[in-house]
Amino acid sequence: MMPETQTRKKPSVIVRLVLCLLILALGIGGFIVLKKMKKSPPERPVTQPALQVEVMIVHPRDFPVTIHGYGDVKARTRVTLSAEVSGRVLRKEAHLLAGSVVNRGDVLFAIDGKDYQLELDTAKSRLAVLSRDLALARAELQRVDTLRRKKRVGSISAVEKAEAAVNAIRNQIIQVRKTRNRAEIQLGRCLLHAPFTGRVDWIGVEADEYVTPGKKMITLVDDSVLEVNVPLDSRDAARWLRLRDREQADGQHWFARPEPVTCTVIWSEDDTVRASATVDRIVSFDPKTRMIEVAVTLKQEKNTPVPLVDGMFSRVTIPGRVLHNVYVVPREAVSFTGMVYVVTDGRLHSRKVEVVREENDLAVIDKGLNPGEAVITTRLEEPLDNALVRVVGGKSQ
Image (tube, rainbow, N blue to C red):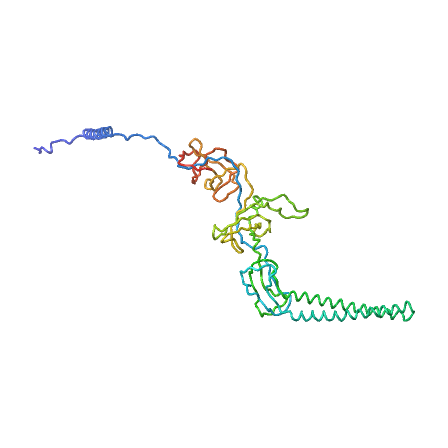
């Protein structure tokens, strides 16, 4: 008889399959029950983020262009006086120091003129002797001529010799007079006078020094008329500088004279040191740098403790032409590609504009905008067209 364990039969394949399906159904049912028990999160509407921007309402207006440049303040009149005679410097005035002011006609230097004085005295003595000789020669000529004409005594040759003697003395007198005049001129040049009231800028000789003609002795500067030569970009000068109608005669090919507008000159080291000036003329055009040099003349101002003086490097502001019916916006409102962004119905729109002038932190737009539009002044990096925007602030034009 076989054991009981051996007599039991193993479950059939069908029973096993049914059990597997039953377990799988229970798992699926449990998953469905658990899924139904889970609560879904609350739904939120999809919103587009809005760009926060500042805007400016623009309107067309007139914009006066201002031209800026730099240059050194210089005196218009600067003269270096040189010695005109040779000799030793006898005297140099005690007040003659660099920076001091001398008046017109003041004696600056005295050069030894004894040689010229001796030449002058000699010429005067010779003139006195020749004058007496001329009187005697004329009397002799008259006597010989009278004897020949009235008494028929003498000959024509004797008269001619007497006349030749008179002419020779006259010629000597002319030469001696030239010597006398030249000595007087040279003697006068021994004293060096100030040709105008001005400031002593440089002194090249001292007392007891020997000088020759052409030796530079002193430089005087007339500070009453100061000017600044301002180099300007030739394109800016041609486009924005106020020039009058040509007044030169035909054939004079040069720039017309600028209008005498009032400009401002400010010392670059201190903004409080400034003066008014007037645009005077166009000095030159440099083909290498393509710069036009404009001269402005400073106006004299009294009671100024620290005035603009010769040598100060200064900033010059020149009023230029006026642009009409243009839009003025901050420079950051215009992209590098020449685009401006405006707000319309809460959406961003790009506009291609034409910038005719950039000055300081402003951009002047000629075309591309309409009156009353809201221009975005916030700097944006390639925003998408029709993007939603939210205005958080504004600026006045």
